[in-house]
Image (cartoon, rainbow, N blue to C red; front, side):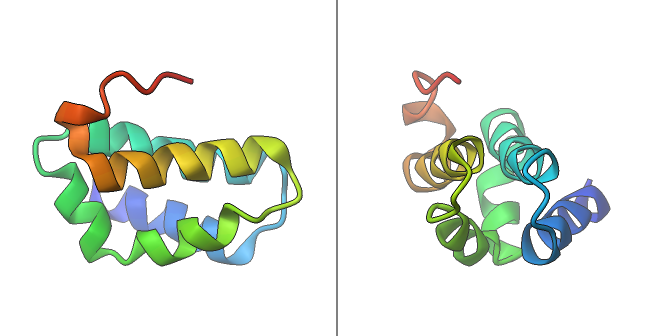
Length: 85
């Protein structure tokens, strides 16, 4: 799973595609939600900084999914379970 997360983070860094970026933000948030240590893994891969940058993206879908991921990073799976897209 680490390889897939690295690919998603690379997409976050290099792409401006409004179809690819929302998925590159949403999928790590789902990983955080369902994997027992997903929050730790995503944090270790330094995804938080990239997500913070994407929160200012001109595309609303990118912004929404970046915000969702940041919320799950900060709150953790237990407290962020109410966050639905």
